[in-house]
Image (cartoon, rainbow, N blue to C red; front, side):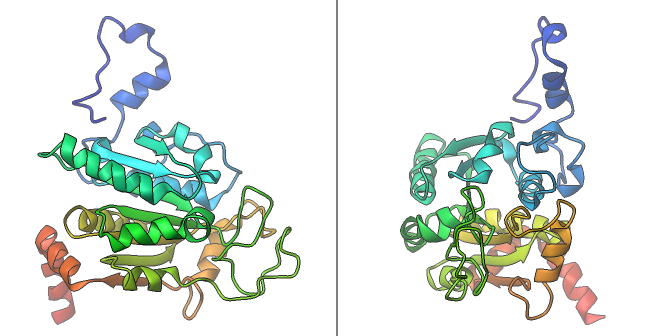
Length: 296
């Protein structure tokens, strides 16, 4: 998937669609320091999508794609939901699993890749909604963490079932009234980040996608830790503006309002000692700079 791997045969260049020419010639794969700032300039970072206008999930998807350390050697595993409408537009290898079994599929895939490419790093990244991750697929999510499977799980937390009418999910906030939950949620959000920590995840982050620099750091570090140490988990608030009664331009503000001090998506990061030691070896210069700034 890098420019060194995908080239257009010169004999056929003129007859290839302009969109494909641009995808190959202007792609970010192989570019040092690629990141969220490349969003909007590269077709493989979702030039178009079939989600609702202003959907925060489309923003999150772009950031995730832009921040993959090695997109040409990454396989993403998705599940039924709004994300399955986007994967066909993504220039990254991906598999669409059944609803809820994405972590089981990723477990087998990661192991198969390690046998097929013993001398090559192949990153596996699960990306699914709260229904697939926390409700229907919770057992397979937890079992992959118990087994210390080396891949990253990303949950797009809509706080409800966004594409099937607005049913209550385990991650819906207490008291919230949805179209198909008229009595309101009766219990608090399932504390999956806390469960992830106690289930063996070495890097856990809970946040919104309103701050792209923070998202970039979390995605990169989660995938790097998963390569060498063990399972990692990221929970991103991607509100369904349609189901919560917001206008299409209000998604960003909704996320900002939800990440303040003592709010349910106040930024939280957990790094195990083993993961921290590994990250220090991966980014020694960066860590030294931070220590120097603190010292001053």
